[in-house]
Length: 335
Image 1: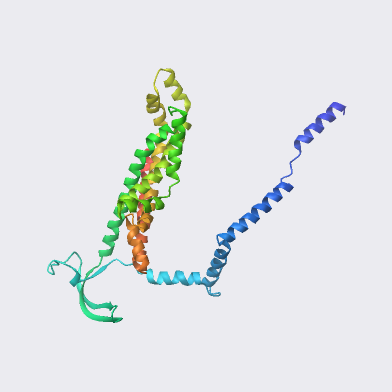
Image 2: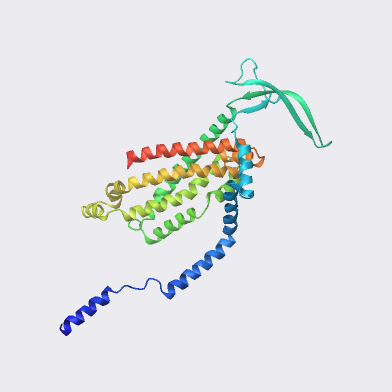
């Protein structure tokens, strides 16, 4: 074997050598990451969560006792069966025609209890009640419909805001770098404003009701949609755009005939996601008085009516599942 061949083999051997996967720097990095995670976990009580969850699992199989499992059992015992009916004292109903009661309703005698603060005593009196077997279900369904409307209008207003901002925030179609940076900053500002905080502020301006909820949803999600619109425009294939530009088409025509056909399917998918998200978020905004089913949920939770709470949560769950089903159907037809 000559010298040149030996040198060639040595070079090949050096290329074959594997690099050390774990170096002292890697060990140091992993150690620091572990320390940071341990410190952060203690601050967020992850250690307590792990301990309490372990106790709950052991208690579920008959080993020891757990406050977590006791709390779940207490809620479940009071939440089920769910509440579907309403019970209203006849003396509190004006203009009720006893000969023409609401559908499926009936009169039932019961006991009315009242508390007097002055004497610190309770009194009981016989009373008649109007029982509507599906009264509360109808009420919850109507409030759920209001919540869906909030999500719908929040999405519509979000599109109106985000579409022009998204085009101006696309680097290749913004008329000037200053306009580009201002549009991007404005979208970032909208994204940085949580719906719950915005709703709290808008409730002070517009009062309790769905207006505050709709605007809060629109403000935040317009920042999300606008950024997505801008990114999709920037990432669209350049070939069709260059072909139209070289043929003398202006920027508006290039957007219309070369960009929008490419990005429209992705835009539709994003709008569908935002709509579903807005409905879920709208159920939470009601907690601060911004309309929707969340207001009823908060009120029932505060007075420990867990059977009513379970009814509301079940309706929300069914609504989300149904919307997801139709969303998938629509997505298959449009994409």
